[in-house]
Length: 534
Figure 1 (cartoon, rainbow, N blue to C red):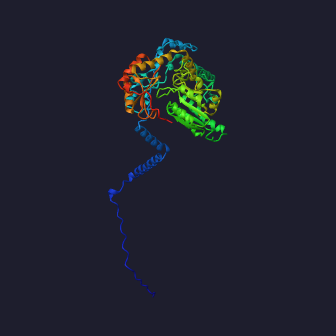
Figure 2 (cartoon, rainbow, N blue to C red):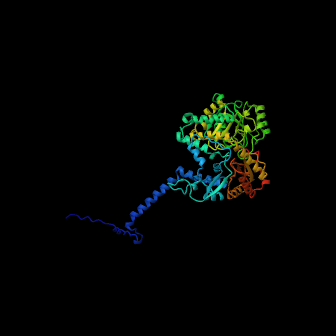
Figure 3 (cartoon, rainbow, N blue to C red):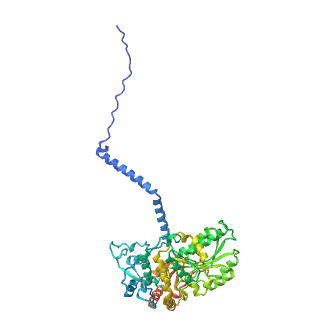
């Protein structure tokens, strides 16, 4: 019988614990799971997308630009566009006749009906309200009411306010002259805009040459170089001057004795200042700033300068102060020290001098001015700039003046209009007489001893200037407040610019409006001589 094996065992293991089911109320509905998955996935996608957008350069730059604008606004230097509304006007029978005869070159002995359109302007109510409250504007209100197919596209359809313009630079009122407009229209019909390219490639035409020749004759210089703007003209000249030192030093950095010494008036125009800064970057010039129109200070600086190559550059008529450079004294110092004299005659060309030759002609020192910069966008009523100089200087500037070299040339219709303007300004001498009569009228009506058609009424604080400008706006006059950084702090002003097509009645009304917001006896007309913008 087989043996039975008896085995002993321990206590049996306990039965497994039952898993407790979650409570019914916490159990999600099986039908909601796809929806929850969809929502969570899209949320993650949106979060990821937002994070990526925030890290894009454009997002950061938008933030930085907004911060910069906030700072400008806090400093009260945020500038605005105040658009003028130009609407179709009914042409006179004479204007229609001139349009029919394209080749007609008509000049007139007195003011015509159309001349007033250069100083009679309109602004829409939205612009008026923004101006009154000093609200920043990018000009968008001028087109907000435009409708496709309108006869006047791009013009807002609301009430307009008529203003007399006392802040423009169209000193002779030539911008509305039919002969000048017809010259532009005729050239546009025959040639379009002309070849589009820089003057050194394909943009220089017989129209440009004709205009240059007429400007050289006006300024009594050997030749002339057209530039896109007056700003570009000053930039081109200064960079060309800056290149001379390095060229003569064998394209290396010149020593101090080989550099060119530039003496600049403290209140010269921004285009001269920026041009000088570029010239300094070329390391070929050394810059000296003399106090505004202070010939004693300039003489001292010249006397203590041992450099052989010296240039003095100045505005001939200062745009923000309305005073003339001391041309006779500058001519005397030129003979004494042997420097090259450069003037920016932007505000004097066509206005000053018997023939409109500018400030140098007015003071009978044209031969003492070596280079004259001018503009066609002020008294000429057109657009563009020029440099009247010798043929050698012209060749140098067109070879080294970067703002000339790398800019598209002036469109042919603009060149044609500017040439017509030179001719009209020469023949219609009544315009120069008229603008100087208005200067005398302003003197008599206000007692302020102004000396030019640019009248700078310094009222002091920014609030005073803005308040006076708003008062004049309500009275129907377009006069802007000039504030820092254009002028020094606490020398804010009203800049009144006279035109040949203003009337005595215009001046009487303006003087009456001014007397209600400023005290003529306490008003200064020239700023601080010690303020240097460079």
